[in-house]
Length: 108
Ligand SMILES: [Zn+2]
Image (cartoon, rainbow, N blue to C red; front, side, top):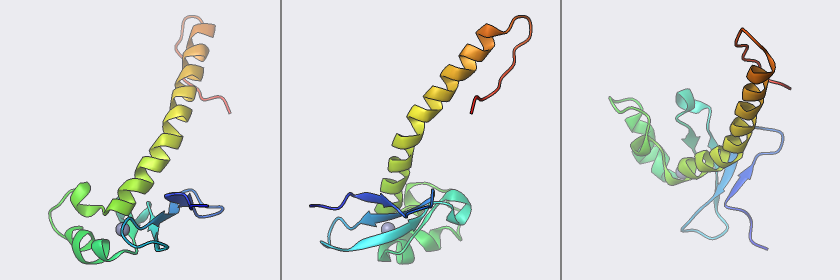
């Protein structure tokens, strides 16, 4: 069985193991909360290329994020977007049920 490309660290929402795309069996720990949500990775690309750019004038983006961070962000986005759409649906329902005032509230 092949391990998934992105594996959440058990019990955590913002840390993931991301498989190497060049070295079989290698995986890196990615923490998306680090550096004001730019993310941090244990790979050499982040250590030597992306990480040091965080100290410069670069705004967070592809140059400050290695491939593994980008995979973890895509993974969490895929999980989050349907939930966001779900919440927006609930917000709309809430609005139409009420008359007069617009009340925005998330149902839990
Ligand atoms: Zn990396």
